[in-house]
Image (cartoon, rainbow, N blue to C red; front, side, top):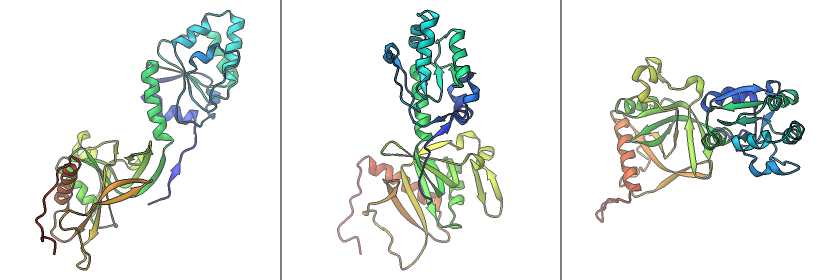
Length: 309
């Protein structure tokens, strides 16, 4: 497991390249300011602050201007408009985005070009746009780590499979996919902490949906099995670790032990499964996931007294 990292900023140009299509963005001015840095994981809307003599906005935040703000500016004579716009642009804001329906005058756009501050339009309405944008920024700025393992969606449960190299994680993944599970990442899983209690796993874009199968080589799960067998990202709900069978190791036989695995200070249900020749590990993992789902519903198995040796 690699050390955690936190993305503290992203350039406007990289932001546009990465999220422009998802957000319906179009650049209309100030592209020479694409190197400006976005340093906050949330977008803001000036709102009532527009009426203040000195508009004070959060430095480093993306600012979203809707019909309300633009109509307010358009309602003044040119000289007053210039003062308001200059006031807006004096706040060290990385970029501004006009939501659907916001129609500024030509002079407004020219100010952004002159100051080198990027201005975009979006096809989305203000509320929907800010919601989607803040979700994307939260993931982009999230604390993250990279682990070596496999992440699957098994029965709508995010399962992170760990284990030493060569123990059969990828082969298990193939079997589970054939049984109806979905692959998120194989070999390298990037885990992001969203909020205080949520971990989301994704695969690196350059090797996404690729699985190495010994004796066959690298296969593309999306091409082999179709888009219904893969997911771009998934919340992680439990951890399963594969261990080589050791007769001297005492494994849980009754399911009474409750173990957790800590990732970025979040505790997840944790199960250790011994691997031995002839044991169908995909089926065992399937049962482990089903059993965990039952536990979370509050169902318990009554163990007769004296069963544990």
